[in-house]
Length: 163
Image (cartoon, rainbow, N blue to C red; front, side, top):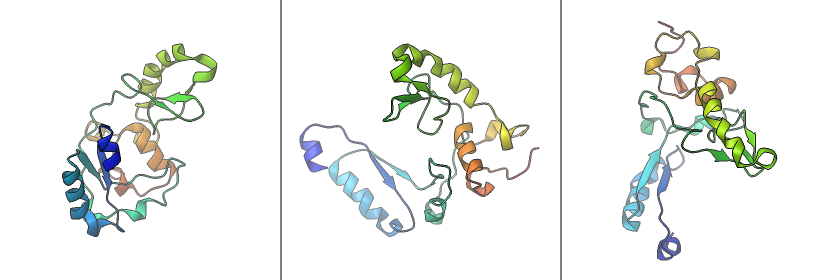
């Protein structure tokens, strides 16, 4: 970190708080402050990108935070995610459908806005929810939780209620 700062790189730290390091939170914060870099804390863990829930038990319950209502996202409009295989998607969570940059090139990126719009629709376990305007999780992330068969309490403040 010191060498990166000495080289003039702008750093922004993500402090990931889980059960195994929760006792070090004050030290992590102090280190970031000593470095003089901005930092964010993350304690709400999501299922793996492969759709399994094994990471969820690692959460540190005392550091979990209530998410703010999801008010939309510029994913696929102002930014995108590209994987090592040249597939561009709206974000690191909403990876399907994607655009093959090797096959379509940069012009294919123009379709990401439409893909993003389709991925944000409330479907599956969320369709018909009359409280979706207060939902705290974007639809692609909710889908990851649902596919991992994660307990509703991990992502849905409404439980199974739909009114």
